Structure formats: C-alpha cells, structure tokens
Length: 398
Ligand SMILES: *Cc1c(COP(=O)(O)O)cnc(C)c1O
Image (cartoon, rainbow, N blue to C red; front, top):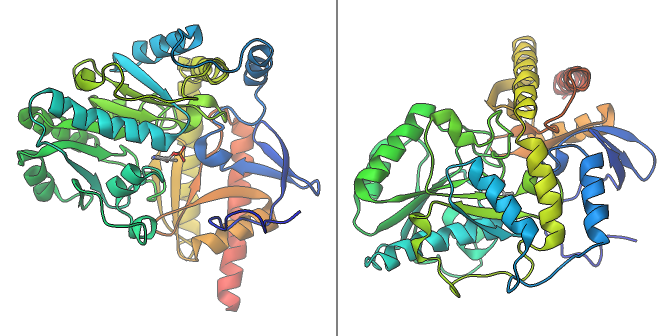
C-alpha cells in the first residue's frame, strides 16, 4: 500500500491510523496518541462512542438509504430537534459542510429573487475564513491558495477585511447586497472570534438594510465553544446557518438551517440531494445531537475549556520564546507560536504522542472531544508543555 494512487492534494502526517477509543487514537504500529484533532472537531464525542456505535448498528440492520422523494422519520425528528434548539424554522440536510454552505448561499440569493429583488446577489465574506472546497464556498472565502487556477472568480462574491467596520457598513448598505457570510469563530483561520458586541452590531445593521446573515458554524457550532451555537455568545441569531462536522459525530452529516422568512425562495424543486438526510445519517446525527445538546455536555465543555485556557496562558508566561498568543473560544483553542506550527505539530506527535491541528496565522489548534476528562486535559497540557520544552531546546541549538 502507498499513497501513489491517491490524488496528491493532502500533505499527510506519517501516522497510519488503526483504531480509536474516546480521546485515544492508535496507529497501525501500536503507538497510542492523545487526539486533540478529533477529525478537526468532527468526532466531538470522541472515537467509537458507544451511543453512536449502537445507533449505526441498529440503523444499518434496518434501512440505509431511500430517496428524499419519501418521508424519512429520522430526518423529521432531527429537524425538529435542531429547530427546537436554535433560531431556525427549517432545515436542509447535506453530507458535508461545504454543501451546507452552498445551500446557505443559494437560500440567501433565492430569498431576494423571490422578494422581487433579483439584483441582490452580492455576498460578502471575510479574509482568513474557510467555508469548504466547492465553487461557491471557495469564492465566498476567497483564499487565493484555494481559488487560484480554478477559473475566473465567481460573480457576486466579495471580500472584507476582518475588523474593517467601515468597509462592512458600506457593503451592507449597498443595494445589491444579498448576504454576509462569516464564521462567528474562525477555525482554519486561526481561532479568531468576532467580538460579541460586533455580532450584535452586525445584526442591527443587516436588519436595517434587509441583508441576510449567514453564519458558518460548521466548526464552531455544536457545542464546541461552550454554547450549542457560537453566535449565542453574542445574544443574537443569523438568518441562515451552515453546520456539519460534529453533527454526525464523525459520520458525514451536514445541515443548512434557516428561518421561514429567509427560506422563502426554497420551494419544491429548487434544491436537493441524493444522500443528504438519509436514514443512516439521520440515525447517527440524531444520536450525536441529542448527546451534544445536553446542558451537561455544554457545562462540561466550559469547565474543561476554562482549565485548558488557564493552563495554556500559564505556558505562555513560561515559554514566551515559544508561545505568542492563546486565543479561541471554548474547546476551539488556538495557540500562536514562534516556531513553525507544522514543525511543532510534528514534535508534539512524534515526541509526545499528542495530536494537534494546524491553523492560519502560525497557530496550532487544540480540538479535543467535548467529553474530554479533566485527567485527559491535564495529560494534554503536560504533553504540550514537553513539546514547548523541546521546541525551546531545538531553537537554542539552531
Ligand atoms: C470544515 C469546514 C467547512 C467544510 O466542511 P466539509 O465537510 O469539509 O465540506 C466549512 N466551513 C468551516 C468553518 C469548516 O471548518
């Protein structure tokens, strides 16, 4: 076996995965790792959670797939649960985050078209954001390394600089603006959170001009920040929201949520999916959502996140030559480094069996399962500390 026949779009770590249990991951050579990547915040309940394993087994013996031309009880149940616990009135199920984003973008444009303002097609995204890899998503995020070479920029997509309030105001006031798309807490971009007061300001301004707000909570939603939805920290809500990653606890499930108002144009025939919302996905998604949305789960996230953040700030004090900044919200933690983040990830993995994810702005992201125990959190900090010590020694020797 080799990667020879895989399209070479990934720079894979030299770790061949075998199995996982909770926060532990084992490679095929038997090495045990503490996993603070969790499929980039996807396996939010850890690997092989017994409730999710049971949900897959039960449903696998019953019914996997039918078309959306039939009524799917599991889909109705999960949509009910999502709407009960969010601002939304309606849900469209997808297989991935990028498809949820596509549905969100289409819902926004279709809204204005159905409202008799078809000229309102402009969508504004922000620098440092990530929305997935399909055409609409790469144009919305406009990261040149994901758009270059893939043809002309798509019409109607524009970019704003994170924190440039004047440009944002001008964009919202423009008569052709359909929507703003943003992550309340950026994931890939390096764990940058929108200040809570700015979330409220954004809501007021968008309401004034009839512009829709799309939140991409694919990574920061589903309890990751210590509230079920990251925007709840701002005491406001979007019109449309894309979620995925943790929604299926590791099984591919995504969703686009919207108010009835914003979903005005999404009528019979205008959108669809073969696999989206199939019975197997809904069984796992329903089980994962029920577990993650429990108040106890969210309280636990806040407790562990408080501990980790405090400890990481302590490490920053002790290792100012290694750590520049500790940021993020809840268990979407970013540590900005002096040494190269990719190298640091390799040292953490190979020397201390700690898996952390990379991120923009030379950050590493710490994305443990939401049910990480305090003991495991202590272990993560100890391994991170050792990696900082190693980094200091390497930098001194260089
Ligand atoms: C991962 C991610 C996506 C894309 O999700 P896929 O399932 O890979 O398509 C979109 N937005 C954000 C914020 C993400 O973190």
